[in-house]
Image (cartoon, rainbow, N blue to C red; front, side, top):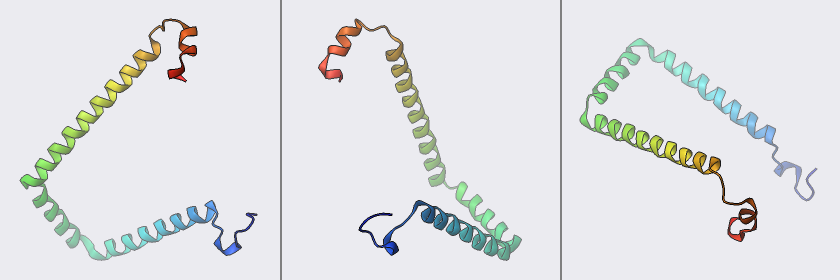
Amino acid sequence: MAAGIPHRLRRTRYNREMRFRTGLLVGLAVGYYYGAKAGRERAAEIDRWLDKLRTTTTYQDARTKLSDGLREGTLAARHLIDDAARAATSPTDDFRTTVADPTLN
């Protein structure tokens, strides 16, 4: 028991996880219900709207910028990993000087 904290204020991890799961299930159920109620006509309408959106230049520019940014970020991460791997596998000068160097501790 947690000392000094009233029982009504204590929150356990289990309660938070169960609340999240319950909320997720309720949200999925409500979404499914309203999605099924909307029917095929509404789904077709949404598909047409999305097709119109995908043909706009704004959408295409944003998609290109996003993919370019992801590609650059991936390349930068690969370079960092390669540099770290090279540094970890390269031979050091002397183990004793590395351990005695106060800037490395």
